[in-house]
Length: 79
Image (cartoon, rainbow, N blue to C red; front, side):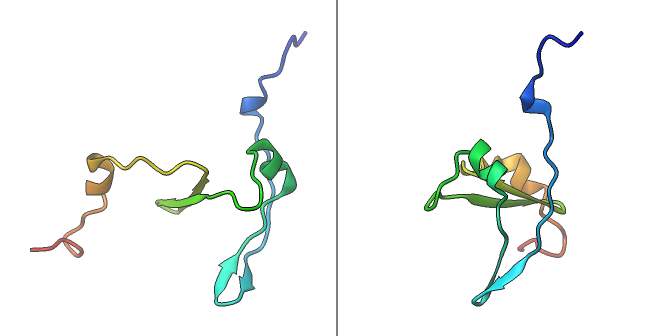
């Protein structure tokens, strides 16, 4: 018998399409995500790319030196 469910680990999977909005691209945030994250019109969000994953957050990412250094390659390294 299941006594409780930890909703933190229930994954919600939805898809949307990227659309043109002026000179930019835009995506719609499903209502359930906006409600769960307490997003409102005017909420500041931050974008971060980690590999091929786009992370959208309401808190500014905390960059560490170790995290930034891992993106240095011979091609983009300054002399």
